[in-house]
Length: 331
Picture 1 (spheres, one colour):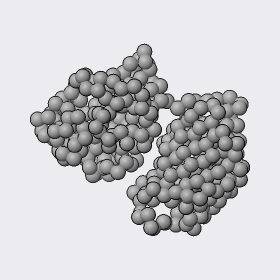
Picture 2: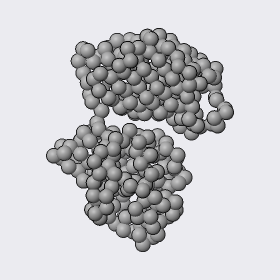
Picture 3: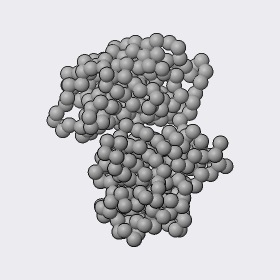
């Protein structure tokens, strides 16, 4: 199936659509801040004559998208699909930028999630080329799960670092259903713990008691047959007590757990260990299974309006590593 290079993709904050010639003025207005390009190899792209070349090659590439703020309708950035390699089962995502008004990680993660979700309909691997001096982009790639691989030379003969994100494995079968039930338990545990990750100061922890529901359609669960997950939370900082109810593999699931967010290890109901602590507006979570042969790590952020939670996680087991992107909505 040919790769669709210019789709229209809609998230909660952004819409990505094909770049058009009439987009230049509005896109340049978003790109004209020198600080956007200060770590980029082409650090003077904020100048109109330089940006026109970026825009021209974008139109000619046939894979350029603009990012539109769904609330304001304004263009706030751009990105591209490029270099589809059917034999290597791979495509590149690059030429990405966002206006400073949309920095902070949430919009960048949504943009990447939308593009990755689309790309994985066609390929198993997505690569990102990043300049060696562009530390900001390198950190952003690490935050969304990019794994550094062998570097490459771009069309201008510049050496670049390469980060790869592989399509999550879709595991099926009887034994894997049991593994997915364990995954559901870990998913619900970390979901409940995650609800403290609101954008307030480190000294102010909100009471996030309430009911949260996993949005299956907006999540990438790596093939786990989870059809429903609802978590009811009783939160009195630093303690979380929750009841998680869900269904996976045709089986209903329910359990109650209690944890803390002060970095102290807590034992769950099955003998595993969970440690979580605050890093500003982000909750970092590390979990270890009772036999010590598996575990999870997560970074969790809540949207500015407090209604949508995203969790990007890596689960490790004897069978390998699996990445997930989960979206929860407050009921």
